[in-house]
Length: 302
Image (cartoon, rainbow, N blue to C red; front, side, top):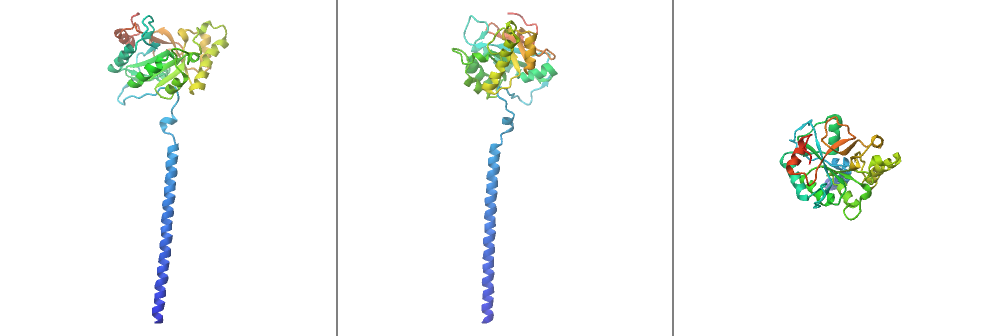
Protein backbone atom coordinates (compact mmCIF):
# COMPACT_ATOMS: atom_id res chain seq x y z
CA UNK A 1 0.00 0.00 0.00
CA UNK A 2 2.81 2.31 0.89
CA UNK A 3 4.54 1.31 -2.33
CA UNK A 4 1.39 2.03 -4.34
CA UNK A 5 0.99 5.55 -2.85
CA UNK A 6 4.63 6.32 -3.41
CA UNK A 7 4.36 5.15 -6.99
CA UNK A 8 1.28 7.31 -7.56
CA UNK A 9 3.07 10.36 -6.14
CA UNK A 10 5.98 9.79 -8.54
CA UNK A 11 3.57 9.54 -11.47
CA UNK A 12 1.77 12.71 -10.34
CA UNK A 13 5.02 14.61 -9.95
CA UNK A 14 6.18 13.44 -13.39
CA UNK A 15 2.92 14.61 -14.94
CA UNK A 16 3.26 17.99 -13.28
CA UNK A 17 6.83 18.32 -14.53
CA UNK A 18 5.77 17.37 -18.04
CA UNK A 19 2.95 19.91 -17.93
CA UNK A 20 5.34 22.63 -16.75
CA UNK A 21 7.82 21.77 -19.50
CA UNK A 22 5.01 21.85 -22.06
CA UNK A 23 3.91 25.27 -20.86
CA UNK A 24 7.49 26.55 -21.00
CA UNK A 25 7.97 25.09 -24.49
CA UNK A 26 4.72 26.56 -25.80
CA UNK A 27 5.57 29.94 -24.29
CA UNK A 28 8.92 29.83 -26.04
CA UNK A 29 7.33 28.95 -29.36
CA UNK A 30 4.76 31.70 -29.04
CA UNK A 31 7.47 34.13 -27.99
CA UNK A 32 9.67 33.16 -30.92
CA UNK A 33 6.73 33.41 -33.27
CA UNK A 34 5.88 36.86 -31.97
CA UNK A 35 9.54 37.90 -32.22
CA UNK A 36 9.79 36.57 -35.78
CA UNK A 37 6.53 38.32 -36.66
CA UNK A 38 7.79 41.59 -35.22
CA UNK A 39 11.14 41.22 -37.01
CA UNK A 40 9.34 40.41 -40.25
CA UNK A 41 7.13 43.47 -39.85
CA UNK A 42 10.21 45.60 -39.09
CA UNK A 43 12.05 44.33 -42.18
CA UNK A 44 8.92 44.87 -44.26
CA UNK A 45 8.57 48.41 -42.94
CA UNK A 46 12.23 49.10 -43.62
CA UNK A 47 11.87 47.71 -47.13
CA UNK A 48 8.99 50.09 -47.73
CA UNK A 49 11.09 53.01 -46.51
CA UNK A 50 14.06 52.08 -48.70
CA UNK A 51 13.69 53.83 -52.09
CA UNK A 52 14.16 51.85 -55.26
CA UNK A 53 17.34 52.18 -57.28
CA UNK A 54 15.37 54.10 -59.90
CA UNK A 55 14.11 56.60 -57.30
CA UNK A 56 17.54 57.00 -55.74
CA UNK A 57 19.03 57.83 -59.13
CA UNK A 58 16.17 60.15 -60.14
CA UNK A 59 17.06 63.73 -60.99
CA UNK A 60 14.29 66.26 -61.67
CA UNK A 61 14.21 67.77 -65.13
CA UNK A 62 16.38 65.04 -66.67
CA UNK A 63 14.99 62.79 -69.39
CA UNK A 64 15.57 59.09 -68.91
CA UNK A 65 16.03 56.67 -71.80
CA UNK A 66 13.91 53.62 -72.51
CA UNK A 67 15.25 51.58 -75.41
CA UNK A 68 15.04 47.98 -76.51
CA UNK A 69 18.11 45.96 -75.56
CA UNK A 70 18.55 44.96 -79.20
CA UNK A 71 19.32 48.53 -80.32
CA UNK A 72 22.83 48.71 -81.74
CA UNK A 73 25.30 51.45 -80.77
CA UNK A 74 28.10 53.04 -82.78
CA UNK A 75 29.80 56.41 -83.25
CA UNK A 76 27.73 58.23 -85.89
CA UNK A 77 29.05 60.57 -88.56
CA UNK A 78 26.80 63.33 -87.24
CA UNK A 79 23.64 64.14 -85.28
CA UNK A 80 20.79 66.50 -86.13
CA UNK A 81 19.62 68.57 -83.17
CA UNK A 82 16.08 69.50 -84.19
CA UNK A 83 14.95 72.99 -83.17
CA UNK A 84 11.23 73.55 -82.62
CA UNK A 85 9.37 76.44 -81.03
CA UNK A 86 5.58 76.75 -80.93
CA UNK A 87 2.99 74.14 -81.93
CA UNK A 88 -0.24 75.52 -83.37
CA UNK A 89 -2.16 76.74 -86.39
CA UNK A 90 -0.57 80.16 -86.87
CA UNK A 91 -0.08 80.17 -90.64
CA UNK A 92 1.92 83.37 -91.00
CA UNK A 93 4.72 82.29 -88.65
CA UNK A 94 7.18 79.82 -90.17
CA UNK A 95 8.64 79.00 -86.73
CA UNK A 96 5.31 77.46 -85.72
CA UNK A 97 4.47 73.86 -86.60
CA UNK A 98 1.01 72.33 -86.60
CA UNK A 99 0.24 69.41 -84.31
CA UNK A 100 -0.55 67.32 -87.39
CA UNK A 101 2.85 67.98 -88.96
CA UNK A 102 4.67 67.39 -85.70
CA UNK A 103 2.97 64.02 -85.30
CA UNK A 104 3.84 63.09 -88.89
CA UNK A 105 7.49 63.86 -88.20
CA UNK A 106 7.57 61.88 -84.94
CA UNK A 107 5.91 58.96 -86.71
CA UNK A 108 8.50 59.21 -89.50
CA UNK A 109 11.25 58.87 -86.88
CA UNK A 110 9.59 55.77 -85.47
CA UNK A 111 8.87 54.17 -88.84
CA UNK A 112 12.47 54.68 -89.96
CA UNK A 113 14.13 53.42 -86.77
CA UNK A 114 15.49 56.74 -85.50
CA UNK A 115 16.39 56.95 -81.83
CA UNK A 116 16.00 60.31 -80.03
CA UNK A 117 18.81 60.95 -77.55
CA UNK A 118 19.21 62.98 -74.37
CA UNK A 119 21.39 66.04 -73.87
CA UNK A 120 23.75 63.97 -71.73
CA UNK A 121 24.17 61.46 -74.56
CA UNK A 122 24.77 64.30 -77.01
CA UNK A 123 27.37 65.80 -74.68
CA UNK A 124 29.23 62.49 -74.33
CA UNK A 125 29.22 62.09 -78.10
CA UNK A 126 30.52 65.61 -78.72
CA UNK A 127 33.20 65.61 -76.03
CA UNK A 128 34.23 61.94 -75.88
CA UNK A 129 33.15 60.44 -79.18
CA UNK A 130 30.83 58.12 -77.24
CA UNK A 131 28.69 55.65 -79.20
CA UNK A 132 25.03 56.48 -79.77
CA UNK A 133 22.06 54.33 -80.74
CA UNK A 134 21.62 53.73 -84.45
CA UNK A 135 20.15 56.67 -86.37
CA UNK A 136 20.32 59.15 -83.46
CA UNK A 137 18.46 62.46 -83.38
CA UNK A 138 18.05 65.09 -80.66
CA UNK A 139 14.67 66.83 -80.19
CA UNK A 140 14.59 70.34 -78.66
CA UNK A 141 11.85 72.92 -78.10
CA UNK A 142 12.56 76.55 -77.19
CA UNK A 143 10.84 79.13 -74.98
CA UNK A 144 8.20 77.33 -72.87
CA UNK A 145 4.91 77.83 -74.68
CA UNK A 146 1.79 76.28 -73.16
CA UNK A 147 1.57 73.85 -76.09
CA UNK A 148 4.84 72.27 -74.92
CA UNK A 149 2.74 71.00 -72.01
CA UNK A 150 -0.60 70.35 -73.71
CA UNK A 151 0.70 68.87 -77.00
CA UNK A 152 4.43 68.10 -77.00
CA UNK A 153 4.67 66.55 -73.53
CA UNK A 154 1.93 63.91 -74.03
CA UNK A 155 3.03 63.22 -77.60
CA UNK A 156 6.62 62.51 -76.59
CA UNK A 157 5.40 60.23 -73.81
CA UNK A 158 3.26 58.41 -76.35
CA UNK A 159 6.26 57.81 -78.64
CA UNK A 160 8.57 57.25 -75.62
CA UNK A 161 10.99 59.92 -76.91
CA UNK A 162 13.35 61.83 -74.62
CA UNK A 163 13.38 65.53 -75.50
CA UNK A 164 14.63 68.87 -74.20
CA UNK A 165 12.79 72.08 -73.34
CA UNK A 166 14.87 75.28 -73.24
CA UNK A 167 12.92 77.55 -70.91
CA UNK A 168 12.74 81.34 -70.60
CA UNK A 169 12.26 81.41 -66.85
CA UNK A 170 10.88 84.97 -66.50
CA UNK A 171 8.12 84.15 -69.00
CA UNK A 172 6.68 81.29 -66.95
CA UNK A 173 3.02 81.90 -66.12
CA UNK A 174 2.59 84.83 -68.47
CA UNK A 175 -0.74 84.97 -70.26
CA UNK A 176 -1.94 83.94 -72.68
CA UNK A 177 0.38 81.23 -73.96
CA UNK A 178 3.09 80.33 -71.46
CA UNK A 179 3.44 77.34 -69.19
CA UNK A 180 2.99 77.54 -65.42
CA UNK A 181 5.46 76.40 -62.76
CA UNK A 182 2.95 73.74 -61.71
CA UNK A 183 2.94 72.29 -65.23
CA UNK A 184 6.72 72.46 -65.38
CA UNK A 185 6.99 70.71 -62.01
CA UNK A 186 4.87 67.84 -63.32
CA UNK A 187 7.08 67.57 -66.38
CA UNK A 188 10.31 67.84 -64.38
CA UNK A 189 9.22 64.96 -62.14
CA UNK A 190 8.10 62.75 -65.04
CA UNK A 191 11.56 61.64 -66.17
CA UNK A 192 10.53 62.17 -69.79
CA UNK A 193 11.94 65.61 -70.55
CA UNK A 194 15.13 67.56 -69.86
CA UNK A 195 14.36 71.14 -68.79
CA UNK A 196 17.23 73.53 -69.47
CA UNK A 197 18.00 77.26 -69.71
CA UNK A 198 17.00 79.75 -72.39
CA UNK A 199 18.02 82.58 -70.00
CA UNK A 200 15.83 84.77 -67.79
CA UNK A 201 14.28 87.08 -70.38
CA UNK A 202 15.61 86.06 -73.83
CA UNK A 203 17.84 89.06 -74.67
CA UNK A 204 20.55 89.36 -77.31
CA UNK A 205 23.29 88.44 -74.88
CA UNK A 206 26.20 90.11 -76.67
CA UNK A 207 24.25 93.40 -76.73
CA UNK A 208 24.03 93.59 -72.95
CA UNK A 209 26.25 96.39 -71.70
CA UNK A 210 28.00 94.72 -68.77
CA UNK A 211 29.24 91.32 -67.69
CA UNK A 212 26.97 91.53 -64.66
CA UNK A 213 23.89 91.82 -66.90
CA UNK A 214 24.98 88.76 -68.85
CA UNK A 215 25.63 86.85 -65.62
CA UNK A 216 22.22 87.81 -64.33
CA UNK A 217 20.55 86.34 -67.42
CA UNK A 218 22.57 83.12 -67.44
CA UNK A 219 23.10 82.42 -63.75
CA UNK A 220 19.71 83.84 -62.76
CA UNK A 221 17.88 81.38 -65.02
CA UNK A 222 19.75 78.46 -63.46
CA UNK A 223 18.88 79.73 -59.98
CA UNK A 224 15.21 79.84 -60.97
CA UNK A 225 15.34 76.27 -62.30
CA UNK A 226 16.93 75.11 -59.06
CA UNK A 227 14.60 77.03 -56.76
CA UNK A 228 11.38 76.23 -58.60
CA UNK A 229 12.04 72.73 -59.92
CA UNK A 230 15.09 71.39 -58.08
CA UNK A 231 17.06 71.17 -61.33
CA UNK A 232 20.85 71.34 -61.46
CA UNK A 233 21.08 72.46 -65.06
CA UNK A 234 24.22 72.17 -67.26
CA UNK A 235 22.68 73.12 -70.66
CA UNK A 236 21.72 76.40 -72.35
CA UNK A 237 20.27 77.60 -75.65
CA UNK A 238 21.46 81.12 -76.51
CA UNK A 239 18.53 83.44 -77.31
CA UNK A 240 18.54 84.12 -81.06
CA UNK A 241 21.70 82.00 -81.15
CA UNK A 242 23.56 85.12 -80.01
CA UNK A 243 26.70 84.98 -77.85
CA UNK A 244 30.27 86.24 -77.52
CA UNK A 245 33.45 85.10 -75.79
CA UNK A 246 32.39 86.70 -72.51
CA UNK A 247 29.11 84.78 -72.60
CA UNK A 248 31.00 81.51 -73.10
CA UNK A 249 33.32 82.38 -70.21
CA UNK A 250 30.33 83.03 -67.94
CA UNK A 251 28.75 79.72 -68.98
CA UNK A 252 31.94 77.79 -68.26
CA UNK A 253 32.41 79.38 -64.84
CA UNK A 254 28.73 78.86 -64.01
CA UNK A 255 29.07 75.12 -64.60
CA UNK A 256 27.20 74.99 -67.89
CA UNK A 257 28.74 72.22 -70.00
CA UNK A 258 27.12 72.70 -73.39
CA UNK A 259 25.30 75.36 -75.40
CA UNK A 260 23.25 75.27 -78.58
CA UNK A 261 22.76 78.05 -81.12
CA UNK A 262 20.39 78.71 -84.01
CA UNK A 263 23.15 78.30 -86.60
CA UNK A 264 22.14 75.77 -89.23
CA UNK A 265 23.87 72.42 -89.38
CA UNK A 266 24.49 69.15 -87.62
CA UNK A 267 26.65 68.21 -84.63
CA UNK A 268 29.73 65.98 -84.80
CA UNK A 269 32.11 64.27 -82.42
CA UNK A 270 34.66 66.93 -81.55
CA UNK A 271 32.34 69.90 -82.18
CA UNK A 272 32.97 72.80 -79.79
CA UNK A 273 30.39 72.22 -77.03
CA UNK A 274 29.61 75.93 -76.55
CA UNK A 275 28.37 76.69 -80.08
CA UNK A 276 26.54 73.61 -81.32
CA UNK A 277 24.45 73.99 -84.44
CA UNK A 278 20.79 73.00 -84.74
CA UNK A 279 18.39 72.07 -87.50
CA UNK A 280 15.44 74.44 -87.84
CA UNK A 281 12.01 72.80 -88.16
CA UNK A 282 8.75 74.65 -88.86
CA UNK A 283 5.58 74.36 -90.92
CA UNK A 284 7.49 75.29 -94.07
CA UNK A 285 9.68 72.16 -93.74
CA UNK A 286 8.00 69.39 -95.73
CA UNK A 287 8.34 65.76 -94.73
CA UNK A 288 10.80 65.25 -97.59
CA UNK A 289 12.94 68.17 -96.39
CA UNK A 290 12.58 66.91 -92.81
CA UNK A 291 14.02 63.54 -93.82
CA UNK A 292 16.89 65.23 -95.63
CA UNK A 293 17.75 67.31 -92.56
CA UNK A 294 18.13 64.18 -90.46
CA UNK A 295 21.11 62.87 -92.40
CA UNK A 296 22.76 65.64 -94.45
CA UNK A 297 25.07 68.44 -93.35
CA UNK A 298 24.46 70.40 -96.53
CA UNK A 299 20.69 70.14 -96.59
CA UNK A 300 18.74 72.35 -98.98
CA UNK A 301 17.74 75.79 -97.66
CA UNK A 302 14.08 76.75 -97.53
